Image (cartoon, rainbow, N blue to C red; front, side, top):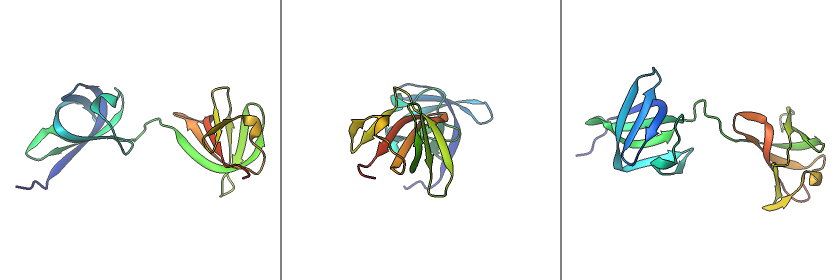
Length: 158
């Protein structure tokens, strides 16, 4: 028999073991699930294991109508999640610790560069001094702070 009806619950993960997931609902109520042996678990669209999920992560849990306490799918919800953001544009100005870019719509954004910022071109490590005005770049920002660059990628000769 094919079961078509499913239920989806949104909340914040409290804890997870091999086969038990505890989360709080949007309303603050704690709820426990048994994780199905064949449950599909994904984080930001990529397959992962339950142990890869961290407490505090926003989740979307799906269960079958015949057993609402059996999680058949667990996905990071992404609502309000701090995660790296990538934006593209052209370099306007670069100093030893600041990168100013403009996107195709003409909006400018300033990013802080640090010793930890990874600058690459075609997968090879480069330095911020290799960035020049007019170059097309992709800037990846720190989760939770779009102004801090954790990575800058550029194509040679761009």
